[in-house]
Amino acid sequence: MTTQPPKPTRRAQAASSSSLSSTPLTERQEARRRRILHASAQLARRGGFDAVQMREVAESSNVALGTLYRYFPSKVHLLVATMQDQLQHMHETLHKRPPEETDAAARVAETLMRAFRAMQREPHLADAMVRALTFADRSVSPEVDTVSRLTTAIILDAMGLKDAPTPEQLSAVRVIEHTWHSALITWLSGRASIAQVKIDIATVCRLIDVTAPAAE
Image 1 (tube, rainbow, N blue to C red):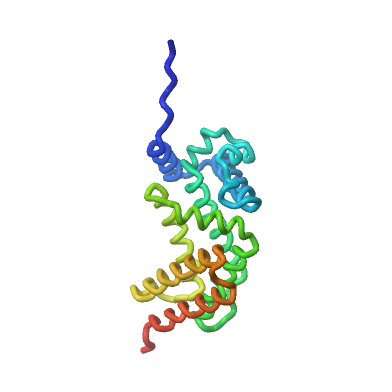
Image 2: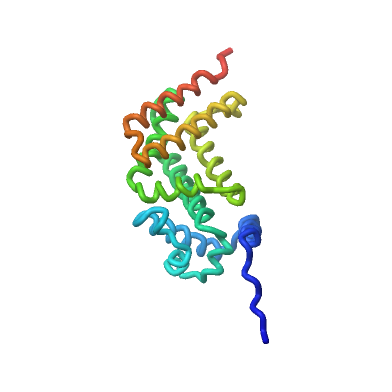
């Protein structure tokens, strides 16, 4: 009588994924990861969070279900990584077409509103990614941290700092990130209009002027 190997626990799957992501991917692995993220985004665009089913993602990306779980141990891991991928694309686009305002606070506000409008064009995808961030537990910390670092990089680029940011400026950036994330949630839940979001983003971005080092 043969015995079946035990099914990997979620912790073991997470460890496998962590090991996979901590080493450089081969060209073939990177192409496979790109297919998975593309399939995830396409399913989310059509039906939001509930439409992203791991089996369907595996079928759409032409990978085995076990292979998918090696890359992403859960749907939440996958959708947070999808948000990371979307933010990376936004960051590259903003590098090509940076905001034109001369004031740092206005540049950051315009940058975040451009990112917000990109989310607005694909509300089902935005809802899926934001819900995944909300559901994320400690096992998803590396992916969530990467999303936060990308958001920080987008804001710092818009600020146009010539020197390293001060602790006060980094604190202001964190508050701006929190406000942007909260604005996404309240808009997606129908509790805030786009006009209100724009006002809130412009208001919190004024912290940049408050924390700017005084000219010598």
